[in-house]
Length: 79
Image (cartoon, rainbow, N blue to C red):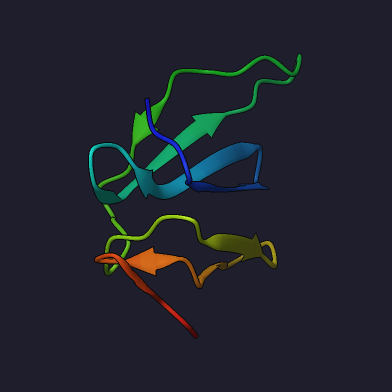
């Protein structure tokens, strides 16, 4: 699995951003939230983070997702 990722919810989707799986990741995943609250199939996004990131935070204002902090190549990634 993947761990130390960040997650945000917007537009009836959950987004899992970056994380760690044998090394830092830049991959993003989108999971649809169905009208009954169940989750749809995990979709691997074609757009990745600009750099690998884990132990970071994420937030959304509804139209943009912001990823801050965490670790990048084993070093602190300060904003």
